[in-house]
Amino acid sequence: MREPSAKRAGTTRAALTLAAALAAALPARALEPGDLAGVRARGVLRWGGDVQGGEPYVFQDPHDGRRVLGFEVEIAAALARRLGVRAEFVQNDWQTLVPSLERGDFDVILNGLEVTPARRARVAFTRPYYAFSEALVVRDDEGVRGLADLRGARVGTLGGSLAYDLLVATPGVEVVLYEGVEEPYLDLERGRLAGVVLDDPIARRYGLARPGLRLAAAVGEGEYAIAVRPDHRALLAAVDGALGATVADGELRAILTRWGLWNDRQAVLAAAAPPAPVVPTGGRPTLAQLGLFLRAAGVTVVVSALAMALAVAGGLALSVARRYGARPLRAAATAYVEVFRGTPVLLQLYVLYYGLAPLLPLDAFTAAVLGLGLNYAAYEAELYRAGLDAVPSGQTEAALALGFSRSQALRRIVLPQALRVALPGIANDFIALLKDSSLVSVITVVELTKQMTITAVDLRGWLVPGLLCAALYLALSYPLARLARRLERRLVPVAA
Image (cartoon, rainbow, N blue to C red):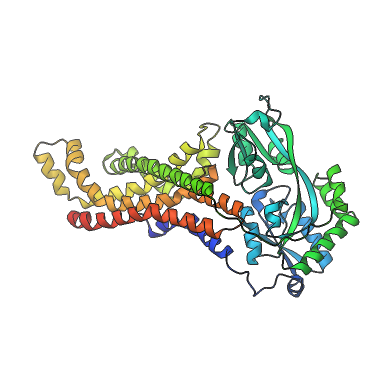
């Protein structure tokens, strides 16, 4: 049987996402004040960022994993020094930086946060500290000169970014979302994408460093600024003043120069004034967004059903091989079960989609089905093994005495009884797989949980999308749970 802890792992991503949605709707914490007085009382300026963004923003020191490096690390230290405190980095997923700021998890956001109207409706921004362009990167052998040449093509970017807003507004482009900055360029190299649009500091380090890729065009512009909660006006003024001082005395230019980021666009930042805070306003769900949720739910069902069919067939083959196969076959089946049960399904998806791409360039949907199916086959094999063990050996002996061959006895006598014992567990595993399917968003499949995060960014709120996502998961899994309980009542006593 699948271990209880492993079964619970199937719900982890959806549960954590719902918890984040509910927590984001709660009032910010009052125990640790985040305004200027609280920062000075603690002696620490907590700044939120995401090390997954990589160079040159914030990334782990390769020689000391306890330290972070990057030009924004140096900016944070410069600002904290001018405020008379020290800087403390707080790791947070980039797409949930704004909700986490509102919760009070840190004092400011300093991590390539683009100034957009949607964000200005929720947070107050300082003056910009970096001006960037949106770089369209394509393969050398493609005659692409701009987004107009990519109608009907797949273009990759990061969810929640300014580049995403730009691509969504471009007619005919199929937007493919990623959670990391290197993966879209890997897919571009392998021909899974026709182009990638990301901020030019990312493009230079992760895209244009690859020999087969080139810059097609700059398709937009934007600015990074530090975000503060709108009610923390004193902190906003102090941080903005400290940032202005780094511009005036040349320290900001020195930092950007050290990281190879200084260019003519940065000269205009010295004269830029911080935008006035805007009263937060939430968006409202639309019928179009509901349609996208239902479409994503359909993707979840299809991926889960196909993966479960693969898992059932694979698990049956593994269990028979372990019980009746020759010694090498038994050893191979046992090794398969232990490896796939002993490693995370998320890791397996990454290896299957990205790691094996040079040898096996699968599309995202196929990789999602294979990854989940191969993982769950290991667990189904254990269910079948328990079912086979539940069939008395006398059943096989009696079949052989009646003239059945061993394969006939297995096929007609043993397996039907073993399947009756395993069926309730299979139904329970299908429920777990349905929720584990949320993990396939890391390889660009837009399923139910991924659609929830996209809608949350569009609506500038997590509660309504989170509750809708939970309701759809419940609507999908509840009938399966009822079926599993019914099978347990009807089949397990018979097998016993």
